[in-house]
Amino acid sequence: MNPFVFHTPTRVYFGEDSASSCGDFLRELGGKKVLMVADAFLEKSGALKPLIESIRESTGSAPILFTDVPSDSDIDCVNNATAIARTHQCDAFVAVGGGSVIDTAKVINICLSFGGEVMDYQGLNIIERKLYPLIAVPTTAGTGAEVSFVAMVKDHGEGKKLMFGSRFLAPDVAILDPLMIVSLPAKLTAATGIDAITHDIECYVASGTYSVFTDAICLESLRLLFEFLPQATVDGGNIEARGATLVASCMAGVAFTNSGVGITHALAHAVGAKYATHHGMTNAVFLPHGMRFNLDTVYPRYARIAQFLGFADEENNGDELALANLLVNKVEALLEKLQLPLTLRELGVPEFSDENLAELTDLAAADPAIMFNPREASSDDLTQLLKRAY
Ligand SMILES: NC(=O)c1ccc[n+]([C@@H]2O[C@H](COP(=O)([O-])OP(=O)(O)OC[C@H]3O[C@@H](n4cnc5c(N)ncnc54)[C@H](O)[C@@H]3O)[C@@H](O)[C@H]2O)c1
Ligand SMILES: [Fe+2]
Image (cartoon, rainbow, N blue to C red; front, side):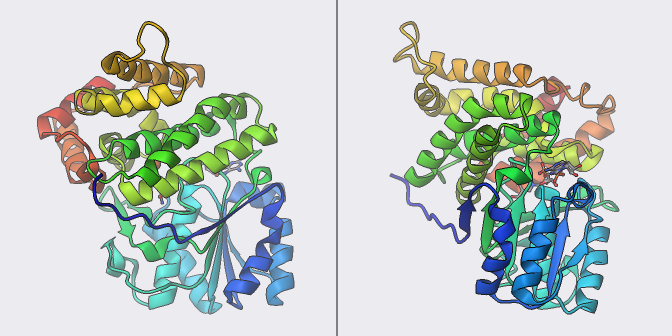
């Protein structure tokens, strides 16, 4: 067995209507003035009201509400919210939204806890102390940001995503409430679910960093996602399916934050940074290509996934290469069933010039996710994958 470290500091609460107990968790964690960073759609829909009421009851005052978070959050948004939080001397944070909202709240919390500017803290393990309390209520089932040690926000000036990584960035509490995700439209349900599937698959084969803990988590998370993601997509009000995908994506978050992701994420981060494509949808385009690129190196591990998911039959049982290929085919079939874009062209990415290709290749090669890919990728490999995905 490889040496490994496994660590998951976030307390996870799951249950229908659990978000309206948000104030109880805050009472325990401390913090008198709360900044609630939330998705604008949820504010308009009234979904935040029970949470606001619960926070008012526990802290004695309503939270300061910040909802101006774009779907690919950026430094300007963080700076605006930080200024508001400083004015109100906020000392606790509640994030209610998708990965963009949760990551934004994490970075605001860094600035409030330690002072200074966003850029002072960019990079890995710059933060070495505990931050103010943060409760995350995910309203998409995909990123795992509610338990992960990272936050990504965009620097539009530089046209790239900035990464903040430290175990202290993991929220103190993650509240998984299926009622908070029922309003997510079908396409985003599918795309965010594929983000979680990508976390599981990439983590399961991550270069020397996976462990028996992450193996177990990834397999069960994949089982839930393959079974329930199609249902959650076609029937958004199906609470059982919504709950299963929410739990599964959180599990995938626990796994990948310990063991890493890989080449699919490196390529998706590059394209997302340059063309503002949605993270999950971009992963969906690259996932079959990334899996095929790694197949010769990790096919026994892919075969184990296929076996666990019950894809083996009399014809392929015991044939690891056949099972590994079958897993890639099943992933492609799922993408088609979910009606996700299968190419970058369909995603709206303009045709690449040589210059664009070179830039994207460099971005992907420099992305931290590539470090954990089981097969080394040259610049030429990355360029070929970008072309193939177009
Ligand atoms: N921190 C991490 O570990 C991590 C991991 C993967 C991705 N990310 C980041 O997360 C971001 C993507 O997050 P995402 O995929 O959750 O999407 P998102 O947060 O960008 O949200 C996508 C869209 O869904 C809407 N939405 C969210 N919840 C809704 C709901 N319940 N009902 C209706 N609409 C809703 C939002 O308004 C937005 O328009 C990217 O910036 C990516 O870099 C972070
Ligand atoms: Fe992701």
